[in-house]
Amino acid sequence: MLYIGSHVSFKKNDQLLGSVLTAHSYLANTFMFYTGAPQNTLRFPISEELTKKALEKMEEYQMRLDKVIVHAPYIINLANNDLEKHQFSTCFLKEELKRCQELGISNLVIHPGSHVGSGIEKGISFIVKALNDCLTSDNTVTILLETMAGKGSEIGSRLEELKEIIKYVNDKEHIGVCIDTCHLHDAGYDLSNFDSFLEEFDKIIGLSYLKCVHVNDSKNERTSHKDRHENIGYGKIGFDTLLKIVHHKKLEDVPKILETPFILDNAPYKEEIAMLKNKTFDHNLKKDEH
Image 1: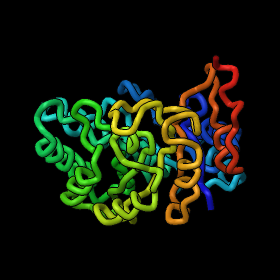
Image 2: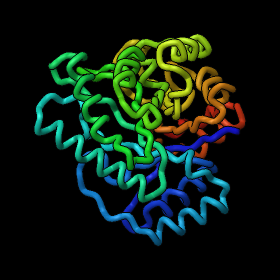
Image 3: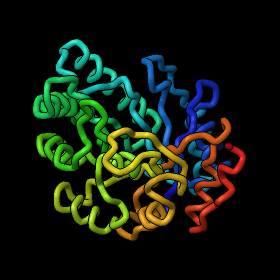
Image 4: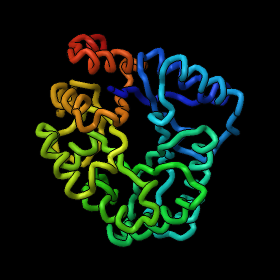
């Protein structure tokens, strides 16, 4: 079955219920959200009542809660070797894990972090330390390390770097990977031969660790290391390649999440999800943009 959705909002007044209703309006059967603004630490309490209503709607819409994704805020940088900032990131990640558990969410995507000059090896050691601090025995949430484009001192633009992190994480059951098609392309991976990429992923990390796919086209040439998302089929990756990724049999059970840009201040997700479901490119999606 194809599990496909997009990023949706999670607002104070309707919380998970609002997220579910928005995803359903896009004709999606899964979705991803931040539990608060990704740029700051402001967080409102999780409402049990709204969560209960959301779960009832999910059952009505035949949405599976175990396919829903939470994304950790950008301000978390587990690779920072500044002890105070590293401790802040670790503590904030622990709080995000608790919020996921309150909502019943199984998977939390996180950017591995940037080493800010200390080097990849040291950055990885700080990431591992934080993950081992967070993945305690009472935790039920799997942390998914996202593949990165390689901007600045980002860690995670090479599969080998994610392998190294996973290698030293104690709780292997609650660690995984989220691949982002734009990030992979911008990092230098050729997705036009996706079977070869999956073989490489399986050899280096293991396909059992691949738990989520962010489906985004890219505004950039391959190996640009820029990370600029484009709408489906309008970028350098192309519709046919993204279509093959979304419908790949080896990823059938893996949720696919769109994070493409708004078009004229409107979310394009309903139309893009339809394109990917129907396997037909919509040449008119951006016709009014210019």
